[in-house]
Image 1: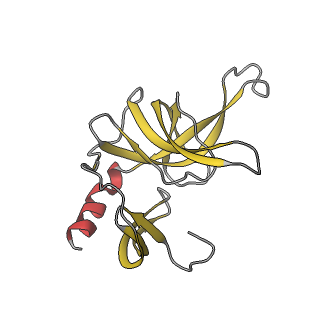
Image 2: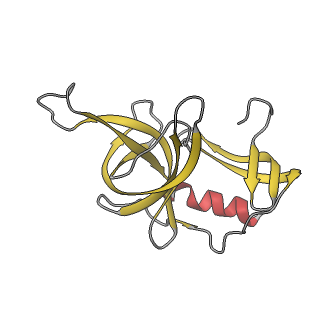
Length: 170
């Protein structure tokens, strides 16, 4: 949420919209928003296809992709770029904050500020959302010397019916 607005702002292909929260899940750290009131008009190419929500929880080893924002340059000439990362689901765990199951993705990278980014398969099946980066020891005998940040996602399969019911009612 932007600091200048008191409600979520949604950017779509045809403009910027005031958002309304239809569903919040603290357990999975996700929210379903709907774009209601247009705030600014602009036009970019409309996407040709959208991912469907996964019907089941992803399996370990599944190859996935996700979008990320990369900051290049120094503090004065910083440029932001959207990048595509490929990864595989390598580890799952119960989140210590008791917010459900999380999956670690290896092979991709993530930067601060891209929480909520989609994670999908090559068949455009939405399997989860990026929720954080996590440190895991690569060498358990020397955990302090072998730490790597991994993108972590929350799966959406358990919310599928609730999300689709809300979307159908709109």
